[in-house]
Length: 282
Image (cartoon, rainbow, N blue to C red; front, top):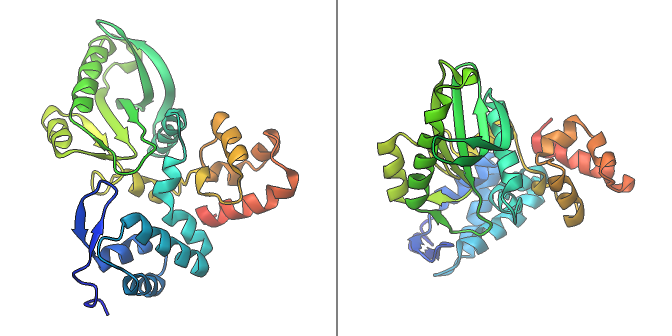
């Protein structure tokens, strides 16, 4: 069965054409929490319906619908990349989301601080610090698939970071701490961007980079799924929560009164909380 479509070419969001890999599809389903048996069954079914040139969007949409029939809570996780895109159109909810990730990594965080450098002032999207380190984190949010952050961005962030470090060295709050600059995106980086960051000592996180500490891996590790994974939230209710700084489904599980505070219809509360608990496995 796997051999039948072994030579099917599929079209990525970027327009690039690649060979279909059923094992990659199967692994993406497993990564969302589906059992190996369910993932194998869905991947085989999708494979049977392929045609040359089919888009990856169509493939994964079909797989998502099939997963929803088998394991509804896992289907929400499978749509994670799209859910992150829905944190937009502005970048502020993504900055709050990254701040939450860093809290679970053991840091205190501040969002959107304006801080003086040696030459000019800088708005720091996420300032994350603990007893040993201070991180300046620039967040680059994109609300369309297929986008890649090129080398100009890390070069620009590196210069901002160095301007800030020149004043942080004299700040008593940051004394004897190690400073790190970061670029975090929900998209991907070009090869030149990664090469520059590695050479210059800048840290980077994208959807699938670096291996073991990528955005999707951190989200899964801490069960920090965005509220945009929840199908029971209307678009209007979702926007109300995002505007209020509520970005995590986990927050709704831990503090369900947040929904009441922001005027979510009482008739929907129980279903929203139930779905949030299913998504986070609480």
